[in-house]
Each structure stands twice: as structure tokens, then as C-alpha cells.
Image (cartoon, rainbow, N blue to C red):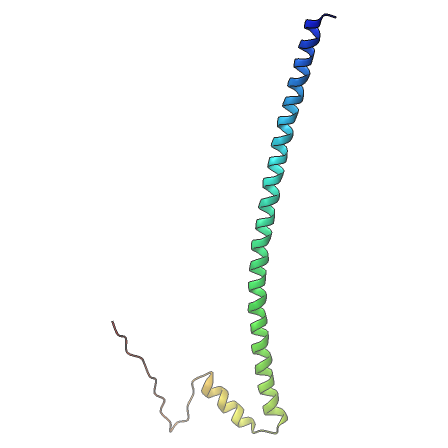
Length: 110
């Protein structure tokens, strides 16, 4: 084998290794971008789930307060008619026949 033949084989080997090295770097870059995308997407979902959790926790606390109010009316031998009247007035905007309800509408200033 001549010296020229060896150097040509060495160049071809380097070319093959260079090509493999470039492919490996491209693969690592693609995997890195995919991992970053997945992490960011998961973080967004976690934030959405936390907001949903806070909303549900608030609704749960509201329901517990309402249950405590109902229990208070039932346990304290309070007048059930009083409870029904308070619900009708507060939530349904009802009034007795001899009452008038006035709504105050704030003036809109431009």
C-alpha cells in the first residue's frame, strides 16, 4: 500500500465520521427542542389545573358555608319560615305583598 492510498482511506473515514457527528448533533438538538416544548406545555397545563383547583376550592368553601347556615337553622330550632323568607328575599328577590322594593341605580357620569 502506498502512502497516497492510506491518506485517501483516512479522508473517507473522516468524512464518514464527520457525517455521523453532524447527524448526532442534529438529533441531540431535535430531542432538546422536543424536551423543552414538553416541559413548557406541561407547565402551562399545571398552571391551568392550579387555577381550576382554586376555583373548585372556593366553590367548596361557599357550599360548606351554605350548609353551615342551613344546619344552624335546623339545629337551633329556629323558625324554618324565617330561613325560607331569607332565601326568598336574598336569592330570589321576592317581597311581601305590602312591601315595595327600590333599586338604586348609580348615575353614569361621562
